[in-house]
Amino acid sequence: MNKVKKFFQKKQISVFSIISFIFLFAYAISLIFPLLWSLMTSFKDYYNDYLVNSFGWPKEFVFENYITIFQHFIAPMETADGLEVEVGMGVMLLNSIWYSLGTAIVSTITSFLVGYVVARFRFKFCEIIYTVIILQMIIPTVGTLPSELRMAQSLGLYNTVYGMLFMKSYVTGLYFLSFYAALRVIPKDFAEAAYLDGAGNFRVMVSIMLPMASGVFSTVLLLNFIAFWNDYQTPMIYMPSFPTLAYGLWYYVNGSYDLETSTVPMKLGGCMLMAMPLLIIFIIFQKKLLGNVSIGGLK
Image (cartoon, rainbow, N blue to C red; front, side):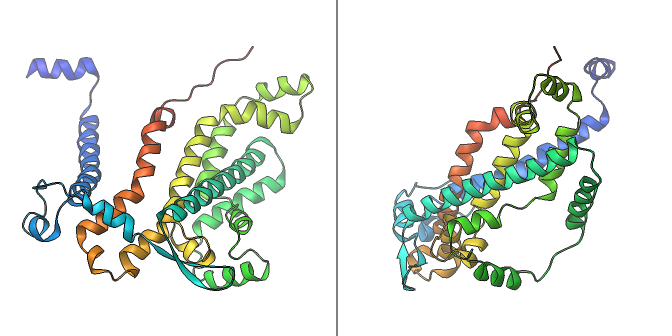
């Protein structure tokens, strides 16, 4: 017992740290297990394997499930003439890329710009902006969809690419606070040195402040990309001519009545296809996103 106690004292491990580790480990297992179960189930035959072995390892990996999913992963699209046609996964993938990436960039830049102005400039109007954003986070907005849809149609933003980019260029409260906190702690000496060298406010923001907040910027950009990638409601309501993979998955799971794809393995296979790009992005950028960002000293 004394050796164990000395070990914990030497490593500076407290009881709270142990409890936190156990809790986080259990939480991680609760997230990983459903993902692995869904992946294994997507390779099972529904009648000969899944019904008798729901949680076990597949008796035989049925790769033909994904071939069938590719063939039946379709969604309705409205043409310029008002006709409804069906499109496949290739068209939905292209729509998902421009929608998710474009709206993520616009939304992240907007939150950064507002966070920069409020954090670095001492105007009374900045305090008003800060208060309005906090109130917007506190006060729930319910029942605004009909009015938003009517305004989008009236302003010519409905069912257009630039319309969606404009509508998604709003300030998200949580991401605004992230930029606000990151930019607020940057010493003023950096900006003052740049001002002495003749730099303007825009040059200081782009060349100094943005690189120092690049860790927060890339993280917010990725989170926005994930949120818009999984967003099926906006394409369903505002973009009938631009169906995305998220909407295609919703239609595949809920709107399609094909008996061949209505089983649990086939539906989970569609979910795995939808999640695969996000897993690849996270694996590629995990070191940059999870690493510590440090700011050096002044010259």
